[in-house]
Image 1: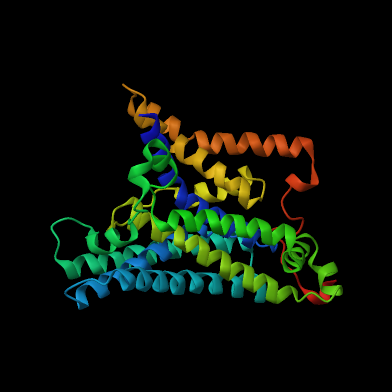
Image 2 (image 1 turned 135 degrees about the vertical axis):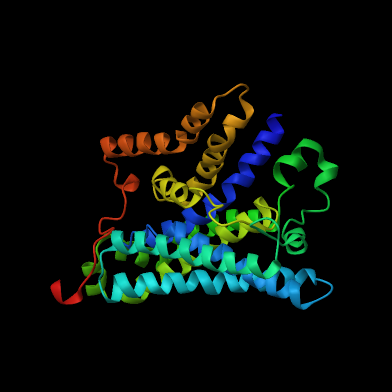
Amino acid sequence: MIVAFIQRAIVQSIPLLFGSTGEIITEKSGNLNLGTAGVMYVGGICGVMGAFFYEQSVETVNPILAVIIPMLTCILGSALMGVIYSVLTVTLRANQNVTGLALTTFGVGFGNFFGGSLIKLTNADVPSIALSATSKCFKTTLPFADKLGIIGDLFFSYSFLAYVAVIIALITSFYFNRTRSGLHLRAVGENPATADAAGINVTVYKHTSIIIGSIIAGFGGLYYVMDYANGVWSNDGFGDRGWLAIALVIFAIWRPNVSILGSILFGGLFIVYNYIPDLSLSSQELFKMTPYVVTILVLIITSMRQKKESQPPASLGLPYFREER
């Protein structure tokens, strides 16, 4: 039971890890994107649309194309969301909080509209789309996992996107701490006027980080549909995972490597009520609140300690206008 719980916690954590890593990249540039939930939703539905039309156009699914096509459509959809947000907040200097919330509303509406349209095309008896062939390709695990016992179950029994999420988080952490470009991005997030005076192109760094962060967050939506939900799309099926990803950013104190363990913890807290017998419905909802409670505690502790490395970027949420410096 313990092994099964850890496995489910890790599977539950991958969308959160993708979302939090993408949001950390965005926030390191000084932009607060509260539209991560909408970006993940659009990434998921765009992947579904790519997989749906590919499955409908062929008799036999090619495993490579079944993976590449949904990933490309997911990238296009989530990148477009990043472009919309970056143009509004960086170029037009719109309020970042309002823009992010509007992006979430737009993303959910976009997903529900096209998801509902695809459901009508299938003439299904239930309000969902089942992409079992594509999901099978995404859920392919390492062939030697079954031969390693508990070690294989805990570390090698997941689909390739799970390992991609961990690798991206580690590369992002290395990028922030060990590269000149990463140092420039952090400088943009801390003080864009000083970075601009030092010759760093603030606008390019902001646009690039927002778009790349949105693409990574979009993979969280794709993973949720193709792996966690076994290729089944249902409108409003994501729950509050996008908001959990944003909460995870605070819990991880803006460190992608810490978010790996934090996402597993959040994933475990989110499902732990399933392993406690005789819980009432109200008690289950209380257990679902625990990731947010933990985030609030971490926020209080880091605020009291006032350590520089535990604080958000100094210009987070503030628009930058070059002529004002």
